[in-house]
Image (tube, rainbow, N blue to C red):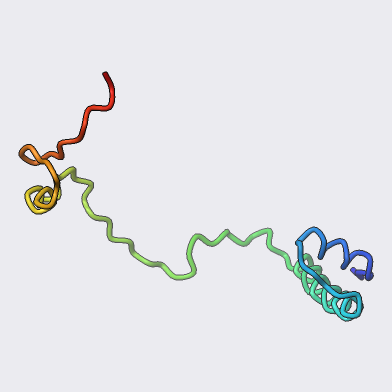
Length: 95
């Protein structure tokens, strides 16, 4: 696939990248080469290839999903302006 200067200018405008006109010709050649490499990937037979979920089999260690209070309620509310037990006291906002 060959890209011309007009296509490069349109791609640059869509990507909101300022590409000077003096560099558009060289960039069109580079992008055409990249598009050629991408087209080569279409030649690879991937019908019997299973999709990868991970490159290496990494065992994931999950922690138990347990609800706790964090065990530090006193330390957390120690600097509160007002506290009642393990809770913050806030002004009433709904009448």
